[in-house]
Image 1: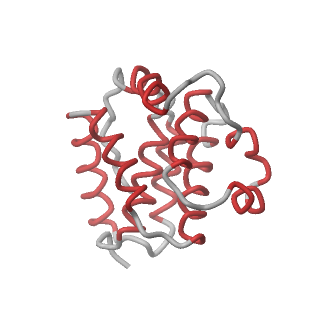
Image 2: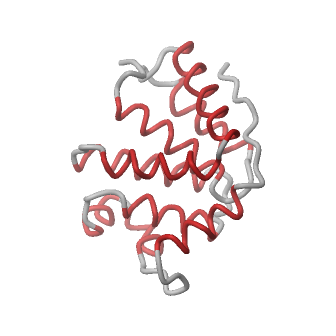
Image 3: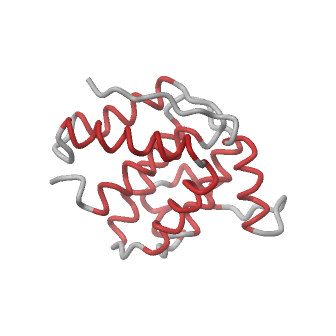
Length: 165
């Protein structure tokens, strides 16, 4: 399987974006990206490194556009329930990687989840421990307001180059 597969790209972008959504980049989150793909046959080394370099450059050039484009791509993808669960699993693993779930990560997860057609019930069957991630957010009156809050934390980040061993 190569990076020409849209699902593979979405999985990689999901892990990448979840790495930065709390405003911090933890080495354990980078390790998730490396482990997620280097220990599987999803990507060959050169394709993965090339895609990560491209994602890093695009993210560093225009963070807001990158995140909006990712969410739009996710919403427009024709994914089965199983594929949507793969996206969710990747997000959860990346968010939990640094053993500190920041509220910004939960806010971002909610945005990500809203781009998918899968039901909350189906998600909770697979991941019952994330029920709080799916609860409505009373703080924000609109998705735009929630996105703006997330962008304020992410804008200050410059994503470092990720080197896959």
